[in-house]
Amino acid sequence: MEIEIGMYKNLLFLIFFYSSFSLACECHVNSENVKENILREYSYSSIVVLVEAIKIKNYLGKVNSSTRTKVESQKVTWKIIKKWKGAVVEEGELITDTITECCMCGVSIGMNEKRILYLQSDVLYKVSTCSVGSQYSIEEQKQSLDSL
Image 1 (cartoon, helix red, strand yellow):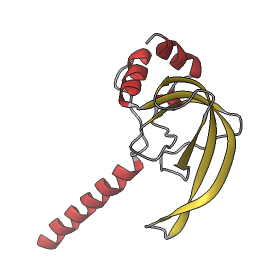
Image 2 (image 1 turned 120 degrees about the vertical axis):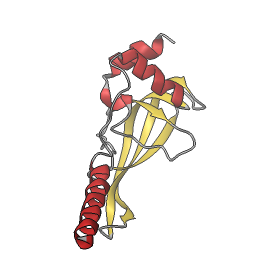
Image 3 (image 1 turned 90 degrees about the vertical axis):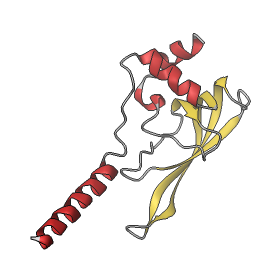
Image 4 (image 1 turned 180 degrees about the horizontal axis):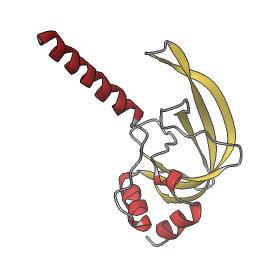
């Protein structure tokens, strides 16, 4: 009987452990109000800019500890088109470095792609599927940001 209980505990732990990884990239907005979600992300970000990808480098980056293989990553140089917030120069450049391999929440970018980025200055800049910049159109975001 004790062995069965131990096996069930281990099974429950494994289900919880793996499901937490599989749900890691599920993004939930806090409200159904688009403007409220955009303004909340703006308030948490140190840099908010409209950018265009001008240089892209795909490479194999850090080693995934579980598979012992290097993960697909992408370094993007962006031209800043418009700035709403942050210590960056309009028409300057910035770089994001994102793990784009499956299930890591990173977004793969195409050349000349435009995006609004919401960045944190205390971490390496990356493009995330969970950002409102990935969930709403540029126009929806611009309307909310321009109203500040």
